[in-house]
Length: 298
Picture 1 (cartoon, helix red, strand yellow):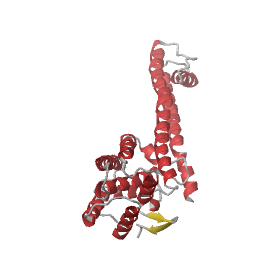
Picture 2: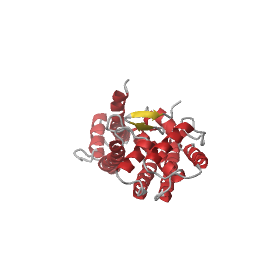
Picture 3: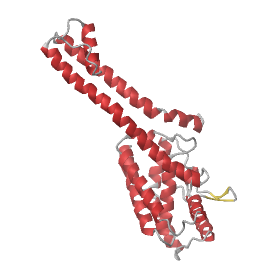
Picture 4: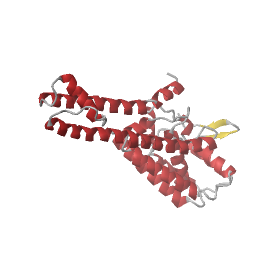
């Protein structure tokens, strides 16, 4: 299956799964209460028991058992049905809202990196937009985004598996790109926003660890398998040419960057494999004249 077709199929997984769960729960509950009506003689026939159960569970109330026991059971079942309706009216719109907010941030990044987000492309855009000396607000914005990812995706597995509605985009790639960018700002670049970048990086790693715990990815940090030092050095040279000021001790910066990356790379690589996401565009590459001049994939 092509990546585009697979993404379209996976996009329907979340809504179909939710509605299937609701329908299954509704019919199991309806048949369960129908059996209770029947065995307690609240209704005379099995068919009447099923009708009364559906009436109470749907909160329509068009058919109520004639006995006191049956009416008491109908009240209990109506409460269960009301809970299902509240779930439909609150949880599902909330789920869609979270996905929409996530996709807005991802689309924002894709639009500014020419639909190919990576660390180098992000900094090239920042230099072009005149933001290279005022990235503090950018890191604060992405810190909030990454914290929201941790709070929501670590509680609902279905959000993790819901892909972007935009073909060729993925929240996993966006997170990887911005964590690399924050990592670079915290270890390699001089200038304003370094503290904010460190906080953004810390919150992002924490959010990924929470999500990994939900998916039972219990293995700890592993040495970087995707990152090559020559790619890192080439990126630093490229950013220096764009006017970014680098730390004097390049070897120390590289070691710190590599160690930080080992804390989140293995989680994102595992997520990409689980979610059928291609991470190649985000693994610390940069472009020159529209083509790749460095690639972190072995």
